[in-house]
Image 1: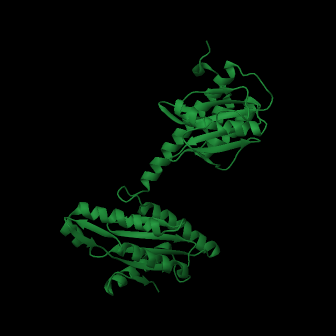
Image 2: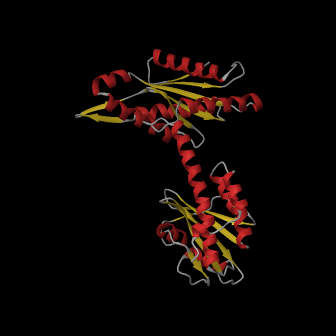
Image 3: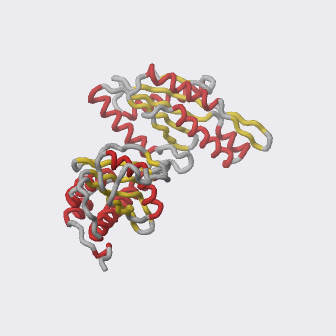
Length: 331
């Protein structure tokens, strides 16, 4: 009997997969090859995410942008993902059990061939093709789909693991903010945009006031709670494009791309206020913290990204020297 592990798939597909560098390129490779292998009109890939199955459609050999998020139940993609079992549907109709199959039927599809994206002991999602010609599927068809899905899953997992390792290398393990290494990369990119087309960016350097006394009085475990809460406040205040960074110790930076001083100042003040509103309790004692912030925006007199960082750091020093718990604007 034919076994999926023995089944042959086009060598060109394997070569293309081996040359991919990220998850998106794997999806694009799948999009190119599925219509060639199965002569199908439509195909799709569903990748497991935190809240459901991220669905990507394929039409004319191209992957679509991320579409809807399917729930982890009551869809054929979720069924294949949870059971890790392939599916052959020879008679699609608008009375099909699953709503996504009913949608296929409404679009003129008559059959579907789907398989889980399985590698080792993990399932990453499901992939499939849909047809309009009332073809009768054979065992070879499902074996081919499973072989393609397994091949794609191997590279998807590889790129996901690499991305995760890269993220860990750029992330502070305690606060989950980005670290100084990522800050340098952001600064170089933003500086290039400034020198090329005058796209502004701003830095808010913040330092928790009298943090050493908090550690000395309540212990470093309590101090860690304060750092984590501060990072959480930064992410709440930050806009989508802003980046929260832990520079080290109790020092943080809110990196604000494409932001001039007029736009950055209210964000920095909101951040200062958010930290001041934090309340902590230790053995019945209420503890509050404040932060001083130095805000600097790139301008023509600066000669490097390091000069802008120094301007923000100098402003931070003045914020502390002149009373703490305030935002000080760099000159």
